[in-house]
Image (tube, rainbow, N blue to C red; front, top):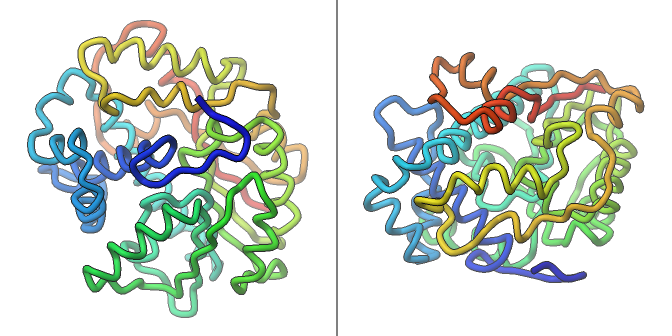
Length: 296
């Protein structure tokens, strides 16, 4: 259960879900026809040593019963990879990965010269990540700045303190984040991003289906984990907040951003991947917008 001001490392609470996502990225990258490249994800999983996730790397066959979760993580990762590459192609040279977790885009992607990538997350998560990267001699392909701060605190001040320039266009991402924030913190997140975004800024967000509350969304998906839970003993839905919050697409459109929305099914088709036959309620969710990009 969540509490005000709770903290975590990479093998507890919200941090453990980030470790799970790294596991699914590692498996996608190791697949015969991968959508992404990620040489760092398996290093994080091995260093964390969590038996469920190290076991999946050694033998992913149990995931055959729940292919949608790892499959979606492949789509989602490619979506955000392409978002950042598109933004820098438009001349953006400043990127902020909000709730970066074990995201290694500063190292994985081919950033143009003079690009700075800021990573915001809990201090213990970034400490673990830095240790693994240093021990493996990893070198980022952009100027990388870590911002160890809780998103429920004054993260804009911490971001500015590491060299962020609000007068320059920025590419922002909020991937796998929103349900882990209280509604008020989510709404403040978008208010802060709006305030810190110069004209020409880009934003990519993973959201939820409009009109479907967070807990119900999670319950529909986890209902189909009855044979095997890809996250092991942890139920991500137990870490979600289900209080009232603004719809991101509507909020951004109302504040002058140009918004485009995409469903998981659309992403699968655009990446040449098929979606297995699904129960009607799950299929309906997969056909509704869940990811968006916005330009100011």
